[in-house]
Length: 207
Image (cartoon, rainbow, N blue to C red; front, side, top):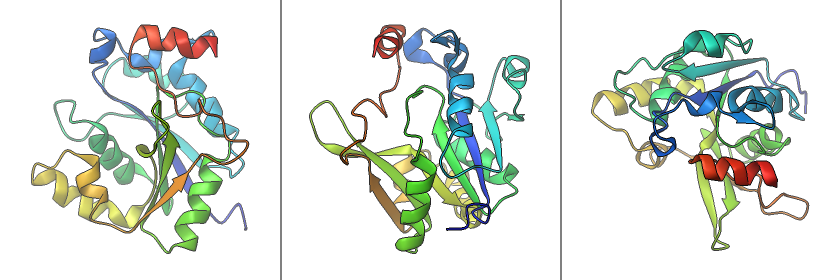
């Protein structure tokens, strides 16, 4: 694989309300001494398949996010419309053939995430690739905010959101999607653990 030919932009999704954290800006909460969004940015920079650029999708405290050293873009849809609004913003701003999305609240995601999604997308001739991971009950479930997307999907997503669509599954279900399970020997059971509350954030820090 020619790692320079992949042409992938990373997008950190930090545009939510943080409602389960009491409305605080989740991406700016500290994890092991650094803001979650910065931990996420650093993890993207360590990927085994390098990214060409990383963008941040945020809707408040924009200057704080800009200080992390990546371009920051708010949702192009008003009203904290959820992750798909971030996908849309990323696809609109992406200057490479592919866009990788990751949330700001899952700081231990795999260092081979990009490589494995990219290989599966190509092997299955898919429009997108999505991670799947073991959850507390042992079932391996898709993690739709960890997604590799072709920028050709922009038109489809514009139509979907303009018609009022907001659910990721309803949109991704319209396209050929490679599901990539991260439950192999050597995969961390906590790689996709996310922090929705401050308590969960403390639990993640303790791992």
